[in-house]
Length: 125
Figure (tube, helix red, strand yellow):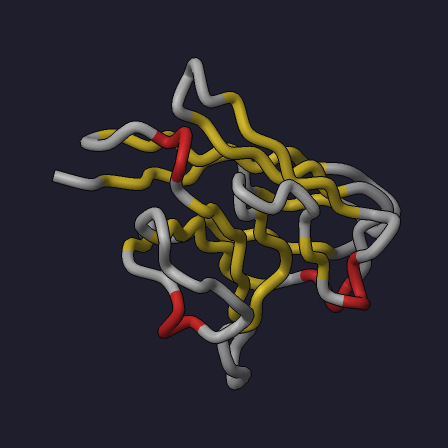
């Protein structure tokens, strides 16, 4: 059974940093694309970053380029999102997602097969 569990969210001041973690179980991460999405109150879920192992070049939405970094540790079956220089607009619930090998992934939530339960990130002074 595929399961994704996020952790690492919390309250941080503007300009601060957080590192989100996503523990994957029930499958081997190696050939699965992985993503981080976020959803703020009243807004649609948006793709923050994703990486397709067959491509290797990560995608970042424009608003986080240069501030966020997605990474994976296949040996540990973990996915991470390092978030630096956090801004008020980064406040949202962050979700980890994955897609089966061979699936053409993109920024639409429906491109992704499995989701975690989410972790809250709040940027506030």
